[in-house]
Length: 327
Image 1 (cartoon, rainbow, N blue to C red):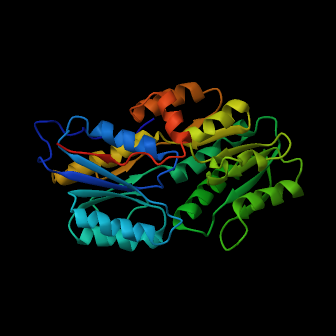
Image 2: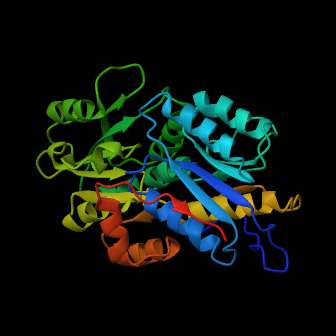
Image 3: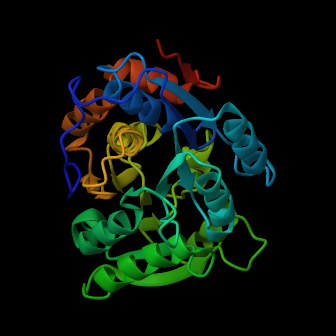
């Protein structure tokens, strides 16, 4: 699956000026999707070795890390900046980037107003809707489930909850036994899931609209009995759970396409191509154990890697390399 809106990538006859540079300010360096995102960006720039790509993964758990990174990026005076925005509290830093000159492309959340050149919707809310629409298929013979969501925690988390709920309420089965939100509570996600499973021991499926707890090394301790989970990410770190039957399904995009699409928009901005489509929407896929082999091959291809390379980098405890020099 790809973007709803597609434009042709720039050609050598219509290319950025030598010395152009793009800065990607993205997820944390150990985020399992980061290697695929950077791989997709590098693939997009393969025809333009003279365009420099600097990547800046940011640990968002450090409240000041993003602000420091933005200051560092602006000091380097890039031609364009691609900024991952996860929360509306980060909008002001996006406006700061746009105000100081570089063309800005945002990923995740759209910056209000017209200061950004473009925006990439990574399909998170659509992925939640995909889980809700396919809930009966995902649950199989299981007749009930519990739900962990972030309604009220952020704009994106609320959108994901509403999309899932709108689809799920149209299905008679499986039955929702309990739901918990991460908004307004000091209880961590693992404890919230365990609380629901302790209360409803026969629940066969756990749906979470954020994948974080399943990306942790000890995620198996969250589930009890024969319960499975479904979540909104297609990260390579979830593939083993699908093969083992602990994950019923995951929904997400080819993360290499995210990097490539954002980089293509940045190139269009550098070339001042005002006629280019400025909003790109990525289409998530529902992935099960039956479709995983095909999906993993396409996921790796979009990242410019083999499946083996991708899995090794995703599982590595070392940060992924962060710079592609220009000519």
